[in-house]
Image 1: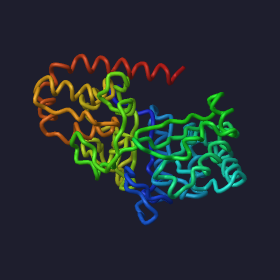
Image 2: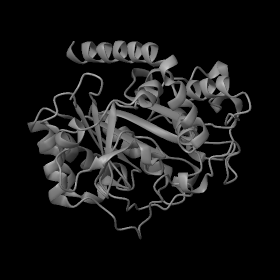
Image 3: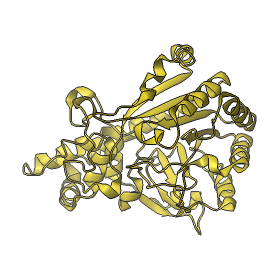
Image 4: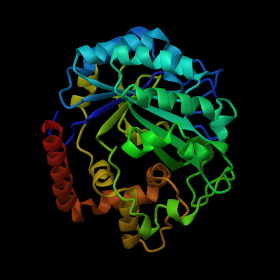
Length: 349
């Protein structure tokens, strides 16, 4: 692989099956969905990842990756043997009590898991009580994992679990950084959003979440060209975002008959993806508008993934970028390569 494209993280969407069926799920997951990466292919993917020197972290997600049962532990263990760090993303359904949470965490610790991310909020809570997320988070932090709890955020969300930060079991870990709580914008799924400036689905967000609000400071996308994902169809996708399956331009190729290294080695340079990584899709769209003042910006976008989807769903924006990319190519390439060099230096420290 060329220096321009050196992904650091492989996110494996093990399945679209989930114990929950949340409204606005980015992949429309539910207990009824059966699509999944075959077990043998999961094992082979881990071996192939070890052949890509730039990838240091494997993320198991879904759907619900814990539906793999003990196979998940075996995959984590093999990653450890190959020198790969691991993270799991889960809704915490398996933490049915504090003892159950502690027992499962001990198994994950023995396998070599390094980090646990947990999702909860109004929609998740209808299927997985938020207390299970609390028990899972406390058990994992007690075992020395890095723990992140992601809570759905939108205007009018009335979620009892918002009190989690004040829970006596959680407070000590918040103080020492063992648990981090993140309130991220919960947005309509890609299939429900037409790419217009007004999100559908009845979800709205305050100014602090709006991507074009200068005071938010949300600009670049650290995931673009740094994270690659494999979905249950075994597509390799240059993204880990909420709408990754809704943007064909992010698809790098199929892993059904080629190895991870083979697909990565055939990826041509892509200035738009470099630009998104270096400055973010909002800045790209602002450039488009500078060339065509009548071009409408998605000012109601509350998530970087929605802005990105808006960009790639606009033939007009893409045409302007193709026509005018020479004006910014040198600047963006220099900025992107400097960021890549910094990433490499940090990874080797």
